[in-house]
Length: 356
Ligand SMILES: [Ca+2]
Image (cartoon, rainbow, N blue to C red; front, side):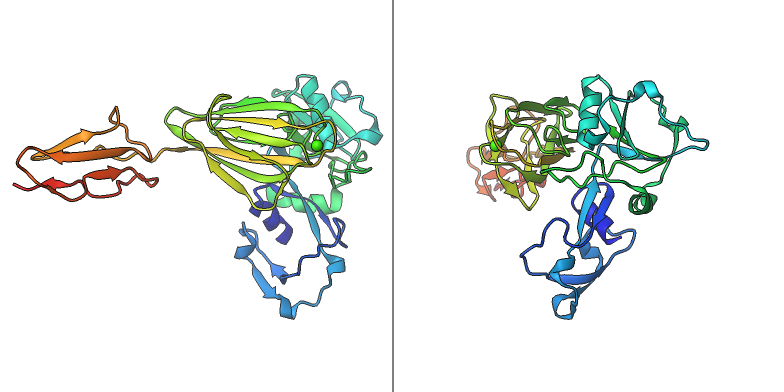
């Protein structure tokens, strides 16, 4: 339950695998809490019961790691009895010793398929949106995945070598289903919410990449974007522009980020470009976005002798728009002559009035 809470807090779906005995290496950060106890509803470690360091008895040797399922993971299925495998014709020819989640997804995407299926640690099948995986398996409910993960998963057989991913490729009589947009180099997003992964995710990204993604949401909305995870090697970077290729740069990101980076577009579009140079690679990034409606300010009602002396071109008032007021000749202004539309959709001051 604690591991699941960690995954949810990070913005991911569920636990793929738990790793004990400091599998990811021993952290040199001081241990601050121990004996954490979470329940099903916890979405942050802040919701859990914890003990503070002075009562901890565990040592750094036993730090735990967790690998999480990420959005685009469409679920784990138990094969139906009697055994119903995916049709042999949909199985890829990737050698069993090379199977990883990212290689399976990449291969299926190259075939123009929208679904990648991993089974028994070393099998990869490709399907499209019409693939009825229900006929081959029975969905394991989200809250049950942990049990099947801990007891039934197998490490992907190609998950070895210098880039340890700690990936699970389902187990015997089980299969995991993924959407093949994961790890694509570029794409055009028009949904109101979505995720963008670095090329080849969850594996390391390849060198010499130049990938462009665009996000476009409904006209009067803006985009809230969060970089949930980023780890880039030197010389590689992600550029985000506030609209299209010609728009203002909102940020150029490189290196590693421990904290989530958040930014907002000023209109309904964003443009992202990832560049990797010829050497060095790393885990890449995971970005989430959602659209949100602009909090427009209401059109002020002008009474008596008040005059709007300058305002926005139309009747729609966005963040930062300003109105200035004056009074008709012979009348004095009471209140502020200038009001601006704030981020919360409220005007900075009351509408002024005129003496008389
Ligand atoms: Ca590099």
